[in-house]
Length: 370
Ligand code: HEM
Image 1 (tube, rainbow, N blue to C red):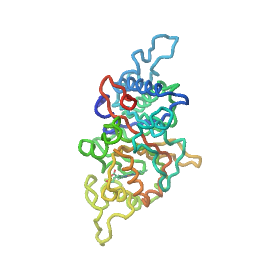
Image 2 (spheres, rainbow, N blue to C red):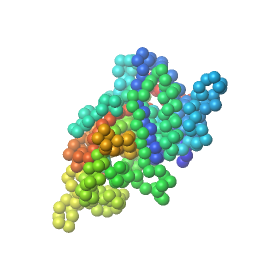
Image 3 (tube, rainbow, N blue to C red):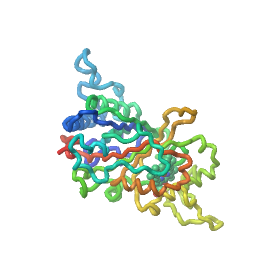
Image 4 (spheres, rainbow, N blue to C red):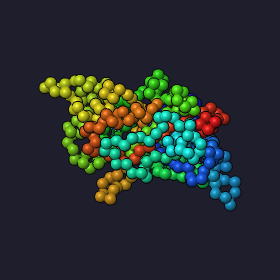
């Protein structure tokens, strides 16, 4: 679909199939901002996002403005473009619940910074934030236009802390629906939660009303910027690449046999009686039968130029949605001995409570700030 409904029980951009382009921005409220600034900001964002996601300009007097003497409300680069399947998803980070806005007793128990994991090489400038905006679209220009104009609206109230773009293959470049590939060249998303199964989503993704009632129908987003040392990966033999992942490269089939979409049989053995999959293969350590938990992954690839030593600064914008960040923590801890760790580094990290969906006339901040 080229446009997704903005209103509903849940925000868009969680179970919506991931399109080609991601822009993820993390913002901090400026010093001295009040809870009323926060309330007005969320109301202004709600109005703007409801328009943008339908392919409209950010405000009625959009790119044309009302006077040549004033800057137009809409920056204009999406003029003539349709909604391109744009979804805008707004969340709040743990730091919003410190003592600045009187929201201390509204903090969901699970909304705390992620623990430090073995091997983490986090850069403070790529971590955390009071608020997040996730924009996804089939057109990078549309996604960026959305975030840029929401940033403009925030001016004087919140400012960007970090911004990460990401991409997957464009729908038009594959003949039929195909599992996207990450920059290791492997299919990513073969085994994932099914977004068309409401029971699955209720169990693993949507927050209930058992903790903070305002978050019922929301979810938690974990965002990790994971750098890949693609140069050393590209010098690794195919057989070794497949051993690391636990799947074949071309088809994405489990090394334990079967086709891409078949479940992984972790106990399978090869003709010599040896386990068909390495004990520390990525998909084994991440498998629900090992971790006891599941998450909805929605990753994008990124490339941000080259590093100071001439390596590609490329990797995965790992995004997962879950009803409790602890699900991610459990899986990430299980992967402590993952063979893949030799080729990746987590350099950015954030967790946000994604606000529940709203009905027409409501603002995204209403329940949080009621
Ligand atoms: C599966 C790659 C990071 C959790 C996979 C697969 C690949 C892959 C190729 C197999 C295809 C599939 O089932 O989708 C990567 C790469 C990563 C990365 C390149 C980092 C750059 C992570 C992280 C987590 C994670 C940080 C969570 C903490 C999973 C899970 C599965 C999976 C749960 C499915 C396992 C199953 O049910 O069979 N990953 N992954 N991955 N990955 Fe990752």
